[in-house]
Length: 124
Image (cartoon, rainbow, N blue to C red; front, side, top):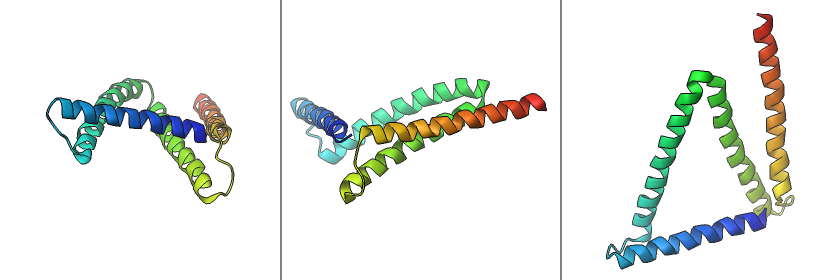
């Protein structure tokens, strides 16, 4: 897990430097805050458009599907936060396998929930 976070941090730093250099070469001379404003703003709106298209398609199929994907994203953020907290405090080991097993736990409980939901719907 530590190696994965370091790799992601290195990739982010590489793009950060690339965009700063590009900004300077184009004569924009964006500050770090301005760079964050534009890059995160653009990535965010691209993400929103993608998610909006996907969720509209899912809404035609099932609101539960939207609920699942939203909750999955919250679980992923929470799991990453727990692993980082373990590293910072030294309580527990920061491992990718811990994160993977955590997400598998969520998926297992979701599977049971969906099966019970289908049975209840079938009985009614």
